[in-house]
Image (cartoon, rainbow, N blue to C red; front, side):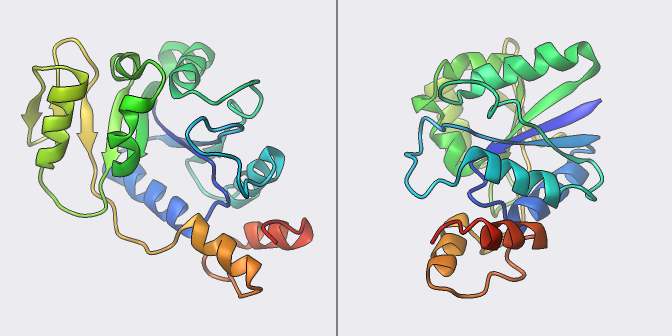
Length: 215
């Protein structure tokens, strides 16, 4: 089974998260995508961060009827900071050889990986899917980044739209639609008592209102 790993604070989950995941699922012919909210993200201070349970509940209720999109509490149940390498290994231990995993990340996160724990081990452990918001060809910045920060020797395969290495996992490029919705925008609108209808799934709006989040 081919499964995507889609992590983030989801603070809160919004429609762009879901639409992008559905696009990538179709683009890569994935069987499923796991959404895993982070409990204590090491790269994002907890300013205005809703409790992990509330963010997880948003994901669970929003994906309840989304075929092939599944919530995972794998990070929020682990104590301490949410390091990606630990999460990847946890998924592989739990599902074993039955699943082939793809770690999904936006361009900003991809270029931030030099600050991540055991960065090169991540590229050895799991296939990476970079999701640039625009462009159709291999981003020259991605090619030079791989050479400089990960390893020399990546080659571009146009047909599969991925960089391939003889010792590391492939890095796939999957351009995604530009959707101008962000969690920051939603939190700011909540603070200003403005409507967020249509920007988030209905269960997210309900949880935010009932639990007085982001005020």
